[in-house]
View 1 (cartoon, rainbow, N blue to C red):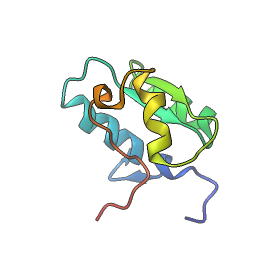
View 2: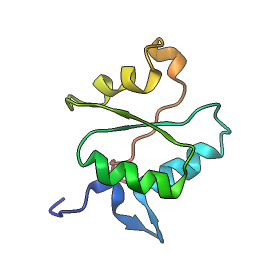
View 3: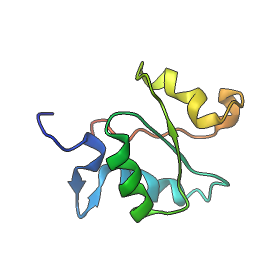
View 4: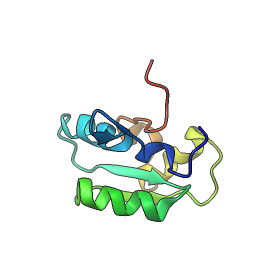
Length: 93
């Protein structure tokens, strides 16, 4: 994607891509909702605060793929206890 805007902040149908993921995740009534941020994290964190102030963020300083992000969202728990994982930057098909 050739854009200065981070992928997860692009809009579709009036909502950011990460906003769609947060809204869909909220439908599952999670105990905690953690979004792992890396690239452009300041922008993404600010956006998440506006979209859903209860969302927690975890910083992945070194982006080595989705599998590498799982321990960040689990807060040190076993990956199986992390619950459902959603991607905010994947294709929609």
